[in-house]
Image (cartoon, rainbow, N blue to C red; front, top):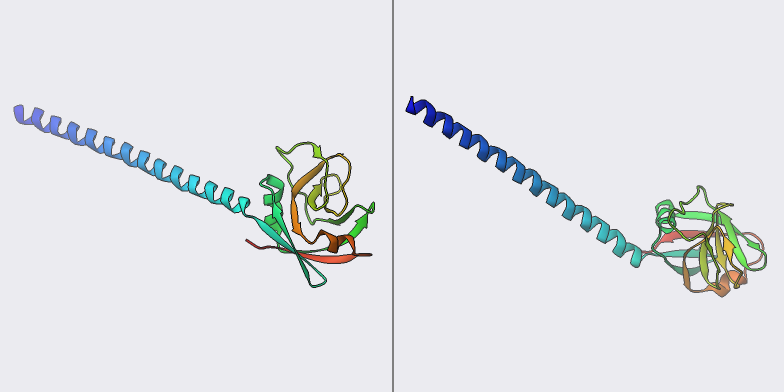
Length: 167
């Protein structure tokens, strides 16, 4: 009878050790998954901090530093793109995107300045401002031109711009 009790106790101890090992293994996997996901999120954030795009128009290259927001991230996913731009209101160059960008969590609008690279949600278009403009609802800043705004201001008629990610 003592051997039976001893055997049962040993089996219970083995089962308890196995359960503890499984729980610790699952927790370790969860911790590893959290670390992996955090690294991915940090890489995305770091990538957005440095995210730049290049606009190529008539052989000229214009660089834009993107803001860290959902609309900018979605734009990056669409690239490369070649869009036809036109002048609007003697203030901005506009082109329609192939699909809408999310504006979730963004302010309801803003006051654009020269060099702003923006998205106007009601029309689904990119806007590149070469003149300052007034506050506009449903206008969302995607980034800012680092240099070359004057190139766009001097463009007449419709013209194509190729947009691609630089880094």
